[in-house]
Length: 218
Image (cartoon, rainbow, N blue to C red; front, side, top):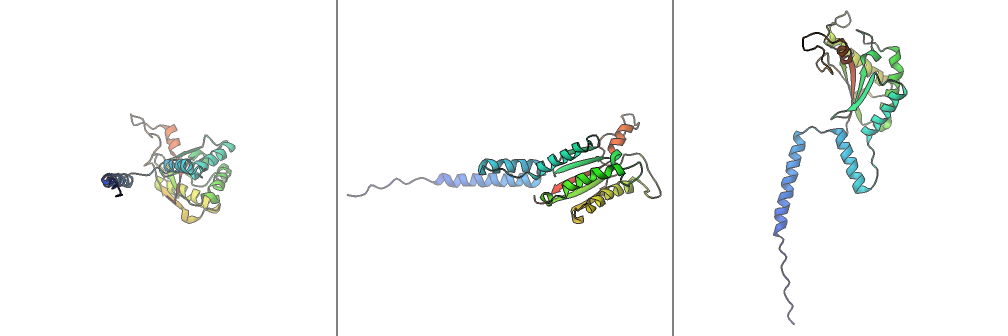
């Protein structure tokens, strides 16, 4: 008997589907290329996808670092002088000026040493060896000048350098460190009120050293 011819399957839709997927891929690649990656959110999403697909736990170094640093700060009762958080690049450690420096000085205060030692011990851990450190010195807008530091530019830079030197002495490689003197160009709070009068408490809060801890593997 003559075999019945099989019906031909129409696969023309696959070409259109493939074009649509390619266009979507190009669109998302373009969006990513012009956007700024939020490393902390990326880590959380990546870990969530890996856990849901692979059914296994995934290490989250940024989250782990924040947890360990929070324990350090709490154990030292330094919550009033150290603030922790994250931004689009990674972990942010904010050290209050009242904790680490005297007015007009870039010499670390004795009471700051045990605090910085504890923080450095966490940061120099092998599990965080892929992280780099960008250290910023901030002052208020209050004019300052001395024989050693002609302006707040030099003072803010020297304070950032003092923290960087300390971290290096505690085992963090020099090539992973970067310092910036910020003067008053990035205040956390307004230095002046709407009438142009200084706000002393805000000026004090703006005097700080900020450590940005950024992963280098993304």
